[in-house]
Image (cartoon, rainbow, N blue to C red; front, side, top):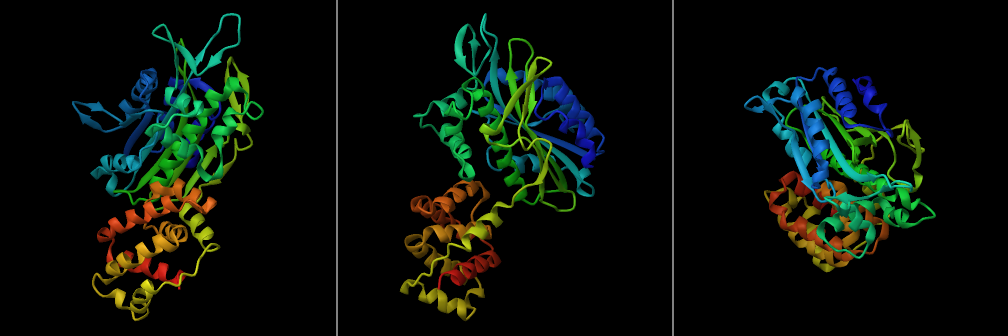
Length: 407
């Protein structure tokens, strides 16, 4: 099955017509003979993205997706400021396309994520990126990414973008603003590329942490729309595949990296060609819970607190295995751990799966800095608020993990 996507892989890094990308996806996916094909498309809310949306509809969705009503096909759509992945979106999309035809075989779900940037020719000058004449007035495009790079703006969508751009210990915003690391002319394009890569990573984390309604083969495609005065074009930044036909969750990635200072730009038939050291290489996606589990093993604290004695004693006598007693003991232990050792506790809880995957970037930052106790306490408060939703087995396992490390 992997070879069926080679025509899409061949597009990675090259600016191509929107129609060409849609057709490559169309014929590649058709060749896989999936009984059911679904699609989720994420774009910025900007009206400039209508061409990108329309082309996926005309070149892919209308041919391959099941009819929603009146013989019309439709992708699951997200549009927000900056084209940010919203946690659980891929899960909801998968559920929508988990039709009876896919139950005994499998379905293929395309998750296409588009950031965007404007390209505008300048008379007698080099072109510019990120600004264009919108309705006769100069305007940032993408406005949300422009706010992110300008700094000093505290809005929910900017904070959300900033969290992704700062993930895994990389200050990508500083790199984009440093002329010694990224040429300013290309910074808007590189910001859009980095954003699509990071939003795709969020989607993959969400998919890997979820059991689909029916066996699913996922294709996650981070892309950048280049908004031009003529027809828009598109750069495919990479491709994730997750073969869940038999319950697998391992992601395989091929494409560009997510560090803007690593990009090199060239020209191919008058269009951009982006390369870096990762292009052409295939690698397995990382297990983020396992990464935190490994880090937690080196940062354990021994907690000697009399308030935990009852918890330790009951666990030692296996009393936590009776009825809902494990939940009662967690209600005692979590506030104490939030007070005396919040960071190691939240790391262990995340590694165990008790903390939602949507906290992944926060957990990595907390684990790396080992100082944001307030954020760690807020996450532990979230766990405590949802104790009643934990199954007895999960509650017992989490309690045993915390007690085994804090004694």
